[in-house]
Image (cartoon, rainbow, N blue to C red):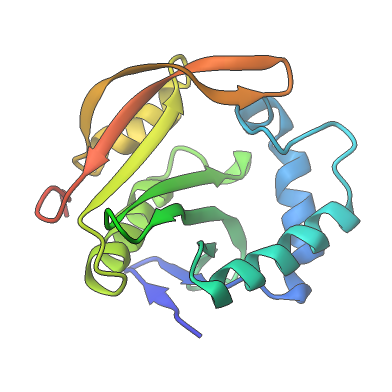
Length: 181
């Protein structure tokens, strides 16, 4: 079981014990992250959280995606999720996705987590390119990409599908050596 550590964070695979706290974090953050995530809905439930955790474990086992619970090292408190998904082994690339609960926003946790998972992607998965897509007007997520040293490559039209339809996305890339520590 791969775990990643930073000065303040422990990134670890989700377990079934995380379902309730994951649900609380998601519901707490409906106003700030809900509109940017395709899977979020007002009726997101404990069963939804449990099913996602099961799927996450299956995808980790198959090497298709690596989802990490972002937790505070001191308290163990669940802060959010950071992932590498959409992995294309032939082209040695993947996508980084992330969200953080509302009460933990603005403390620099997510850039710290993204730096750690990017290093994991380059060093452990032998990827040579990681992409971050954030809604064109999702300024907090775009700021995370910029803080870690990702390069803005343009606006990808209709790149993200949300409940109300497709939206344009800012596209960023990281290659080994880009990460600002």
